[in-house]
Length: 319
Figure 1: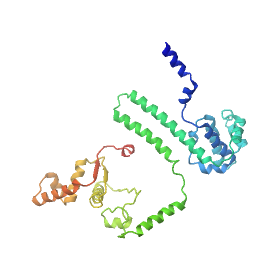
Figure 2: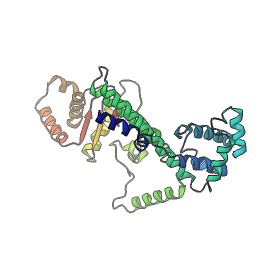
Figure 3: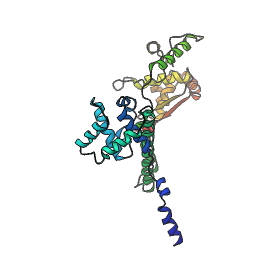
Figure 4: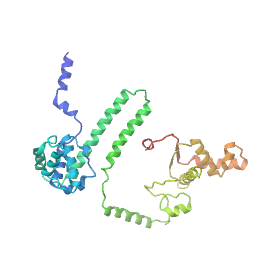
């Protein structure tokens, strides 16, 4: 009984209860709203960084929604106009009324630090989502409902990545062109100072005409190879992979959701050894072809090529 009383006492401890509150910052939310009311032009500094759903308190979400509505309509958003907007939507009472709007505005000295207030509000919102997802992951693990551990892991990873992707929109924002120009000039200077100048400044593909058009694969490039079935898309991609791995000595990752890894390896062997694939498949090789296959095996043995043949790969698993 003594243990039960001690447990009940700790549950009633306000400090312990406070520890269980979701992460939030009432002060940052109030300062953000107050800054917008004081200086509507500050909206441009935080509009892409925080949303209505990021606010912890319901009254703050309502106030933010109406401030945003007024500013985006090109109308002034001050204590009076925001109150009128709330009143028309029958939300003024839920938002604390004129008194609370005045309190928010009066307690905020200026909008100078509004960007930081928005960052705090957004960070707390992400933490709350992590708490929610953590609870969902724990509940799924405790009650898997017949699902395998791998499926639960995929689901957990997907949920965490959703939070990351949603948070990524606030981490970039606008960048002034001046520092970007500096990076470009530094890159041009680096290319100019090369000991062996070349038109190929990126990773060569092995296809001369293509390399002359693109200067090779550049950092950040996403290249899509499209075509009708049986037009040679896979062969083209494998030829590029072969050149990058064997000639440029750079690692290559291949995700094959249709063709088995052994079939890809056979294609590499045939390409490097200049062998007819039909003869390789049937094993009808003459002495010269055996020698060429041995040569290809030696070349590919040290090649930094990695193949993942997981079927139905999704974007989360690809990451």
